[in-house]
Image (cartoon, rainbow, N blue to C red; front, side, top):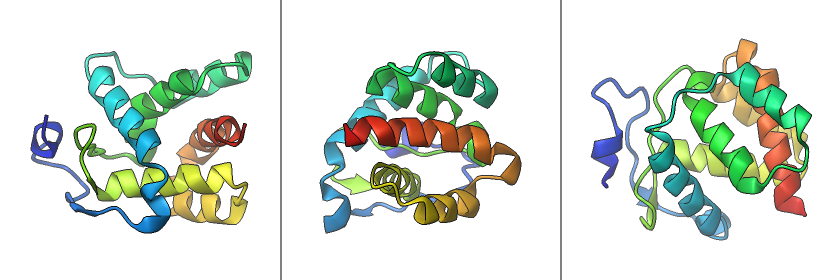
Length: 144
């Protein structure tokens, strides 16, 4: 599967195939897992932010895959736009993948200032709280 197969003609974020920076290279296994989940989630029904957020608060022992799947299913709604994922194993990153990887990295490091900055750059204010909850839950699992 190529990036063009995942993109739509009205994609709000242009595809920026670029080599992965050294600081993000350690996240390639996680990114490849997110890419795989993105391909499997395409056939699933959309999940709204409120449902995803409430599911996290009900079951704090959820696995990383379950939380990542919820995040992938709501990220387009969270940013009010289309998100582009490359095929698993691709050595490059799209702008969307780099943003999401940096967001999860900063959440895992408990860098709340950077998390807030990254959220405000792409996520409308009305979606901040719910999407932040998902990102923080994944960050906590990445720390453990």
